[in-house]
Amino acid sequence: MIMPLAALGRFLRKMMSLHKDELPAAGKRVLVVGLGNHGMGDTRHSVGMAVLNHLANKLSVGDRWTRDRPCCGDVAFAPLGDLQLILMKPRRFMNVNGLSVVGAAEMYKLGVEDIYLVHDDLDKPLGKVALKLGGSARGHNGVRSCIHCLRSDHIVRVRVGIGRPAKGESVERYVLSRFTSTEREVLPQIFEQSTKLLLEHIQERHRTQPNPTVCGEPTNIPLKSDGA
Image: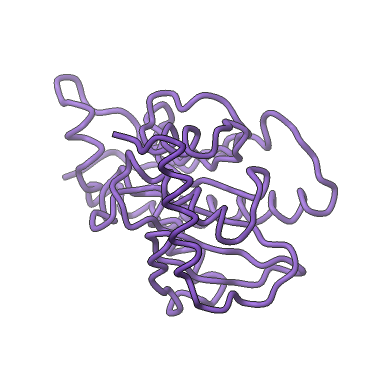
C-alpha cells in the first residue's frame, strides 16, 4: 500500500527535521535514481541500480556511496560541469521506490524537472536503450510509485530493455531472475550506452532547457544467440 499524501507529507517533514548532516555545497542539483528492489541488485528488475553503479564508477564516485536514512536510500554526489549529480538507489522494494524519490526531492529542494529515473523495460529487447520524457508507467510498479508520490508523470526516464519472458514463463518470475551468461556479456555495453544517453541529455538540457516529449533515438546493441 502506498502511503496517503497527507501522511507522507507529515512523515517527510519529520524526517527532514531529523537530518542534521550538512548538504554538500553545490549550484544546480540533479537527482538520478536507479529503480529496483533493495538487496536484489543483480536481477533484471533492478537493472536501473546496476546502471547507477556503472555511472558512479564512471564519475569516480563508486566508492562514495553513503546511506541516507531520511530518504531511505544509498546516495553518492558527483560533479558534472556546473551541476551536482545526486545518485540514488532506494533501499526499498520497487513498488514503493517513489517514497525515497520524493524524500530526496524534498531534502534537496528539487522539482520534477530535476529528476531522472533509470529502470527496466519489458517492451524493449535487451540491448535497446531509450530516453523519454513523461507518459504513463505502462505497468511498471516503480515508475507508478514515483508518479504517485511526485504527483506528476513529467519525469525523464532512461528505459533499459530487458525483453519479455519466454512463452509460458510468468513476468514476475522473469523480472526477478538473473541475466543469463550470454546476456551478461553485453551488459557492460548497455550500461555504458545508458550512462552516455543520460549524461548527454542532462548536459544539453541544462544548456538549452529543451522540453521534448521524446529525447533521442533508441539505441540497439547486438545480442548474441542466447545461452544458459
